[in-house]
Length: 304
Image (cartoon, rainbow, N blue to C red):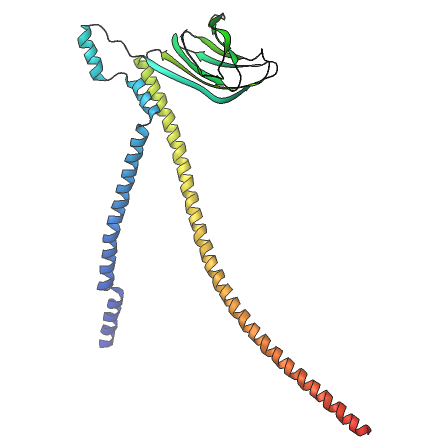
């Protein structure tokens, strides 16, 4: 009876975890909790910094300005000063640039730069220069009705000596043509460098158009977000796969290094045995040679 009681007590002691194990488990849980909280806070901070960086981009700021319109304070000041007149919506200035540092113009040839003007009005700023030789330059415009207008008569400029600059006021819509002509030179080609800037006012955007722009921008960014998130997940999977491959290769390298050391030791052992066997062979060869000499000597004695 007492033996059964002892067995039961021993079994209960073995099944109940020890105090040290319980304390270790509790300590691990306490240590794991701050790590998870810290990782979560770090993720939130990285997301906040990323959102701030994205919202500060010039393209995003211009889009929000086009959608939201002028600030409320500015509009209220205009209303108070205009005594009841409806405030005018500020025009959105669209700036486009074209530039190149080295454009070859063949002898008896030319170069043409077409620029589309969508707004009713615009300003064209241009600068250009050539290397070693002069060139003819002029500006034309093809209007919406198909007529051709000379905005700047073609004439020769000594652009190899100093940079040529100019500005033209445009009435659109239409297509502006900047023409560099080298037809007068049958021998010398020209190297052209130019910088052209077009400023045009776009039409005011209504509330409905603002809503459409906002919805379109949101949909585009949602699609981009899905695409980038998918690519991010794929890259994370690849990263995990590469990490696993690296761990496997490191394990294989460790095993190969162990095998290499074992084979090197085996090689040294075999080499030592080889030297020992070689010494034995050399000794036996000397003994055989001595025996042969002895036999030769004894045979000679019998002949005498």
